[in-house]
Image (tube, rainbow, N blue to C red):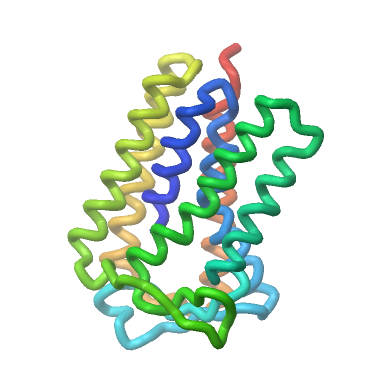
Length: 216
């Protein structure tokens, strides 16, 4: 899931419309940012599995980034960093970022095939496998993205042009997600996939930071 995570970040960002929405989008994508870094370091792995031709997703071994306890720890770490020196407003932002980061695990547990560990590599792995019903999974993901974007722009203290650009970016991410889940060829290697995915996430977070900056 990609656009759906962004949609949740945007929805939570609507609760703090004067903060840069990139804080919440980055939080919603945080576990994947950790994942790709850990794959590049060789601490987690991804491989093309037997179902790639239907769900266009690799099989991950990712207990350190996508285990439930790990997700709680990474979410708390991110929220703690946001709350350093925390006045009341920053504490609220930190709580919203924690919710955005932890929501990532919940959405992944919905769409992934069983593979998200609860505690560690040897613990029970969960996943409802909605990707096996790909049209439904993609419809849900795009609905989350669009709903989150609309909710955010209705409350955002941003110029109209930037609000329209943010809606356009969200639509482009929906198209990118659909194409990736239906047309993407197998990646040449885990390293290439991790590097390209990490770069994509950083660019997306950067674009939201640019669009979400305060009104001049």
